[in-house]
Amino acid sequence: MDLTQMYQNLGISQKVQSYCSQMEAQLKERFAEVDATAEYNQMKVLQAMQESRVSDIHFAATTGYGYNDLGRDTLEEVYAKAFHAESALVRPQLTCGTHALHVALSGNLRPGDELLSPVGKPYDTLEEVIGIRDSAGSLKEYGVTYRQVDLLEDGSFDYENIRKAINEKTKLVTIQRSKGYQTRPTLSVERIGELIAFVKSIKPDVICMVDNCYGEFVERIEPTDVGADMAVGSLIKNPGGGLAPIGGYIVGRKDCIDRASYRLSAPGLGKEVGASLGTNQSFYQGFFLAPTVVAGALKGAIFAANIYEKLGFAVVPDSTESRHDIIQAVTFGTPEGVIAFCQGIQAAAPVDSFVAPEPWDMPGYDAPVIMAAGAFVQGSSIELSADGPIKPPYAVYFQGGLTWYHAKLGIMYSLQKLVDAGLAALPE
Ligand SMILES: *Cc1c(COP(=O)(O)O)cnc(C)c1O
Image (cartoon, rainbow, N blue to C red; front, top):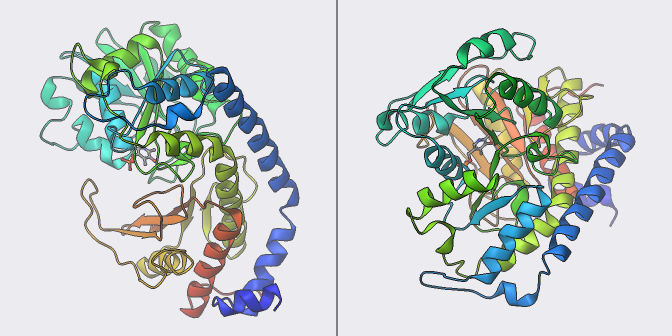
């Protein structure tokens, strides 16, 4: 049986296949660049593991308090080295990205301090953490005020208003690398560095934190290479490599990480407690695989941008732009388009391919959200997944893929669903 027949057995028509193959053939150079970055980052991770003398004893599980958990402490050393940072907190007790961000923020802010986002509205779930939307336990309830400066129309930083917004209360500046559920451009690490330099030129002792979700290993440098005091992310996204079953990380300056650790466990206990419960091996192995997994996901994102842009849909980033995270936004303009796309991604999955996702009211979001994920780790979005809030402009956010071939099938399947529903037309 040839490959065309294999794809046909999986539900992809010859027409969709031939359109997608033409597209893939044009992407050889882009894919070679992605592979070169993966190679560089693989060496970075290997060097960190070798310098930390990672050994099989580090994979042993601890229980109870977790004092002297050698595997956990060495893993944190590996993360610190790979991110060129002083210290790291990498824990299964950090339950998700939002939690890691909350711990980093609330550990480092005190009543009377002000938090500033100079890059517009942060990720939806942080609205409740900060208190932009009133919520029990928010930073606002603890007397931390919040200020925001939006990006300018063309996506550039509004330096003038950022300068005005920084005042004697400004303690921490939060910079979100990825676009999240917005159609603004994702920030390159270089641009993040420029922004940090500007902020520090006005107020040198401000803590600059980067929400690094979905950005890890997309470039050769990370925010901690350009002056970030903390970078924060989720282990069921890029750095978990698809193997971490839970977890989050905070890397950066030692004093910032220590304060975060006192918030995560308790004042006086900090990093000393927190049993790893058998998660260590998957954390190490996932981090080791992460550069190549991210490369597969990036190829999928570039492939999707090219396919949908040429069919007349707005895509962010566009088909030729350089990449700074693994997310691809495609605007369909209708709820039906978003739903068909997500159902195609689901149908291509190794797990739960037989279910059809529907929009639902997810906690933390202000509109119904549809999520497609046929993942080995529930909710993992380094695995091929797509989601979109059912509200204008009806954009879908697509990311992940543990292998390029799976990402490719997912995108072909989504296109098949759109074509079948008459929501997209292939060129004759
Ligand atoms: C995913 C994400 C978060 C939150 O992470 P969860 O693990 O879903 O809580 C925060 N910021 C950005 C930019 C994200 O992409």
